[in-house]
Length: 223
Image 1: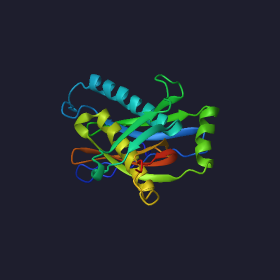
Image 2: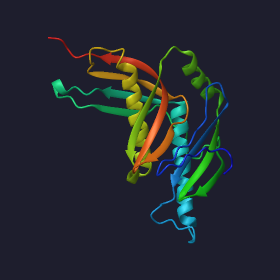
Image 3: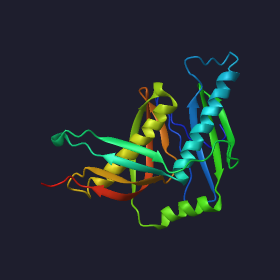
Image 4: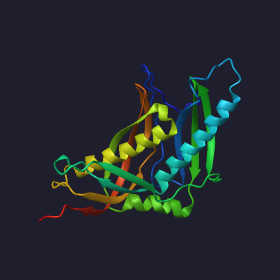
């Protein structure tokens, strides 16, 4: 390995530590993806599989950097069994790093154990750096969350795990502060740093640290 990664092996559990903090002109993340593990063979010509993995890795890096720079709008409806209301969360990117953005660069990586590991850098433009800095300076809370997604869903499973982690972070923040369960909550979140991704028992697990800007809390009508 290059020294950029820290991997902990325990059964099927793998954890990668990622970096990327406020006040910087450069963001760096360490991520990985499977190289079709059911088909991968170290003795075969896996060039097409590796090419697909590189493309998948670039796409994941693009989405994560987007979450770190621009963040997401969210619309969250808490579960309310007494009213028959099901919980749901809609997460929409505020903006995204464009595909082919020259500021997004693959720095280094390794193919090992049927997975492609890669370090990516993103050089922030001044307006992007200012946007991240504004989230640091405005008085908005931070919260942690953990979410899960099915590993068979591949990239969509990773996306689901990140969104579920955002939902848990919202719940962790709101639970001790909002005592009357609201009908709906709207706002924005941004990743403070790259989500940490692990695998356990066929499930992607994401750990996120976000900043939360609550824009609207809509209560249930009182009659």
